[in-house]
Length: 513
Image (cartoon, rainbow, N blue to C red; front, top):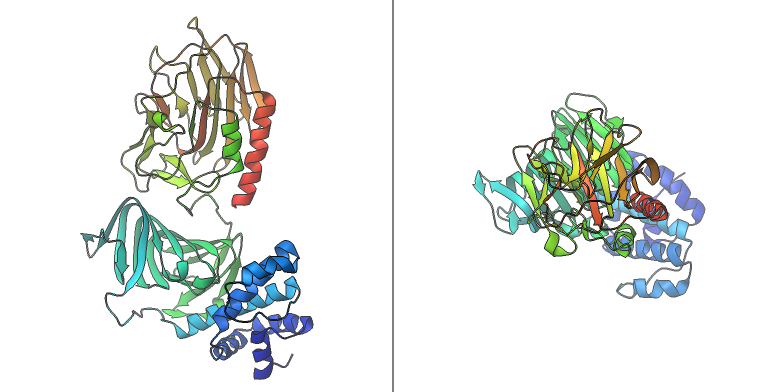
């Protein structure tokens, strides 16, 4: 295909045929052609507005296939919208334009080692601070504005906002250089970025590569002489460094659910499996169908394990507790089973579990526990949840000496009933666990299926016995992974309730990835 400036101008104006769009997309795959397109795009002062307009229009057409849905989406646009085209053509054009805009920023913007001329210019602002200790030049930095410069996050979590509405989540320990409001150098540690359309071109530089964003969600991990890039949505371009220079011949484009590792001194990026559970990508617990389903069953206490600096939050709040901490490298928080957070215990974190000193009464003789567990490493005799303390308490969920889930219930006459799961927990996989005791049977469900059952008398009353998550009364037998979405009931859930909860959870997990 022969491409001249006239055709490029028509592409930027949204006037080509479907056939021309398809051929042009192939032409853009050559780096030299991309650069030419980017430079030509510089002449179009309304490129950014045009891109935004086309994406909004494409989304409206795709979602509604109705011209009446497009008008509200375009009402805020000052430019006259182009004639209506098919969603496929418009979406293709939007991706092509986004690619060109990002390449233009990368080509004309600061390169490796460059810093803005204006010292003191604000690069980012703090949106949320969760137990964070941030330093600049070895001094604690508490200002909500981050000027250009080098920073070290020694503990906790930070949510920063860069230019164009780019949201960045940094997990301690991490060292980074805020070069500008569109560029950050991550020397070590982990960060995740959510980049809206206005933030296209946001760049994360590491010792091994340059990561240029195209309006997406991605995470970067720098440790041990290697950089990893994981893409969860959209598209990023990864440019490895060779001899301290960007090597375009080794560049790779990563789409959703793709990841690479770049090792210092290696010639090419290596494809790896994307890890959706490693990175904290949001500090907020979304309003999910699963949470609504739990609440409809009327738990006496529900712990969603949100990322908070004030402790273990309950619904209702009077049953909240505290997060226990000790020595470790990372915060006591990690990505939850859905979006949001979970309680991280053990592994390499400072998390040592959670404690609720004023839990709800469990005195009806019936009981249910619902929880998600995530095991990082093979473990034995580790606690998930319990109120057992010597002769006190009436329930416990843990791993036994064989690495199997084990439930223990104390009945009103003091007898202890125990059942075990049928197999060991898989590593680095969320497992939905439900325990029920109805006065006749003690049952254990894993991922919606009944795996063990045994006759059991009425459960003993427990009015104010402390509850522990991820540990026990002796601060021993610590869990090695994550615990999330814990719900306590003073009644036994039915089998159909358990199955419905698991189905809802699976739907939420699929949507959150």
